[in-house]
Length: 425
Image (cartoon, rainbow, N blue to C red; front, side, top):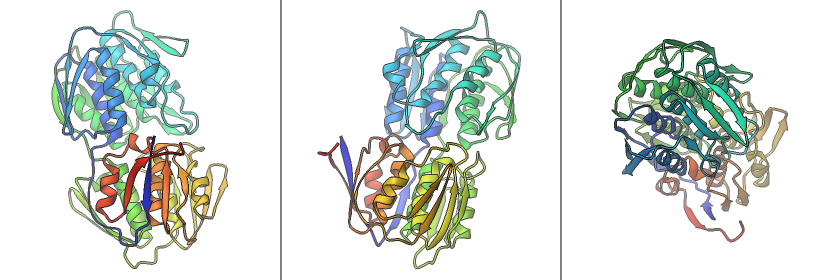
């Protein structure tokens, strides 16, 4: 295993080139199952999760060439219909192979997924969606066995659970519906930019989808989808991560190859607490130098609200602002594994059920801390970046699931970071 050794910085400044979106790339790669023709994707981040998904696709009959952030996916002989436990256990998002396999192959066997270890994230809405399209679902031995006798059939489906719309559930049903017979209407569909990116790829492959970007999708099934060349959107969560680092460290950053329209809620918040924000079509500049930032209140919500994936990193920001900030987590109530580690560094945080109160302004000190999931890990990177002294951040394999070339990007903005062999874990 490896760790990050991070030296706190007093001069966070420079330029960061934002990578392609991890959360968008995975469904786009999976959409290749729906066609026998080549799919070329540009701006794909070189991440552990991407390689895990490529390893899942190859036994399913796809040959994937991945170089310089471009993937070329072609069909080959030897098609399996199984996504096995040894691969799927590494990533919860792998459940999205279910819909495309059912639509294209008529049957599949998919292991229950793995991934980040915070709270239950049930797949019941995925299964409900497939059943409403006419699939027969049998659960046994940790596997989902799914089949359809002839062809999936369009239906009207509502995809909202107790914590709001399901992003991957929307992706799964949308992909399956493109090859179903007749019309499918998805109510309470997720509106995230990653879902929009997938819908736009499917359109370029010949799918018929209306209502993209709204909570109601209408999909008229077609007999066949063709190949396409397409670009992955910028990673809005990586963008938000570096914005929070700049604000917490009272720094100044320019973020390139990003899209400010995907982060309106976040940019409005940063402006309201005292940061200077400037945007162009593909850049965001943040200046927090010599500013007395104000505490804030956040409640995570489905898009276009404040994203749950940025909750942890903004907790670190709150630690660096004098006064009380309040954060309520409505999507994943157990998503506070970063809090005990921040307290080890000197933060003053009270946890109350699905909310935390951050008594900000206490100096953070470098310490031995560990990441327990992807976004909590990013929050601890930010904490190390603004702390006094040296922070040893362990279990960084969580972080490398979602941040491309993070060590280099941190060093380029004057946050001295080394990746070293870990002799503790």
